[in-house]
Amino acid sequence: MNLDTDFTFKTLQLTPDYEGEVTATFISSNRNLRTRKSVLYLHGYNDYFFHPHLAEKFNDNSIDFYALDLRKYGRSLLKHQHPNYCKNIEEYFEEISIAITEIDNRSRNQIYLLGHSTGGLIASNYMNTGCERNKIDALILNSPFFDLYQSEFEKFLSYWGSKIISSIAPYAKIEGALAAVYAQSLHKDFYGEWDFNLDWKPIKGFPTYLKWVVAIINAQKKLANSNIKVPILIMHSSDSKKMTTFTKEAISRDTVLNIEDIKRVGATLGDNVTLLQIDNALHDIFLSPKPVRDSAFDKMLSWLSKME
Image (spheres, rainbow, N blue to C red):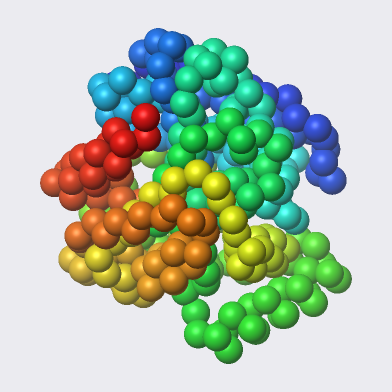
């Protein structure tokens, strides 16, 4: 499938916020039949939807595919906005609810919510309190962002330092908080096989706003009381490692999150959780080398086949 010709992009006009006009982008595969099961994909941080192979895999397996570029990301980023900025991750619930309602009106069939990294954190919180959560039949999480990849002391400093500074300077930020290694392991101009818009997903990342850090940690804390009612599949790599310089190891590890955090928090999200290790996977499992992502697709689709 081709990103430019095989998808429809619909701009959603949302309620204006503290920065003014707000939009999100609702993306539909042109191969959708609108009569069968559907999946809605939520991207991660410093990210947007550029994954036609993901849509193709679902469509080939009789599942309609939809995605969102959330507000202030990718196609939805407006000139007056700060990239990726939020004060509370529940800000994203508006576009998620609109998308779920749109999909439900089209198909009247099962809907699955798929979230990667920060999208997985948002999706997990949505499935606890989002207003259209009862229309979702299963939750799939691809390396969800359940905790900071830091020591307990570092996390303490991150939270309280960010909270204090951002209360005085709402747009205080850190440059270069994201290591470039992960994006380098993906992009075709470096060590990966993927092409994506470097204005929307920079190799060195956008600045990390301290207000966003507080919002993320607060969202992670809320999951201590998670009680998601639908079946949950949590996929993670077989290993994780912090890296500041690219080596071959980066192609077979999660270099962004600690897989032990994913497993620890993931197991507590609800009463029906399946933890699935994908050997030698990248942080975004579906951007891993082909044999690895093909294995992940097969295992995910096998799990979904039981959601009758």
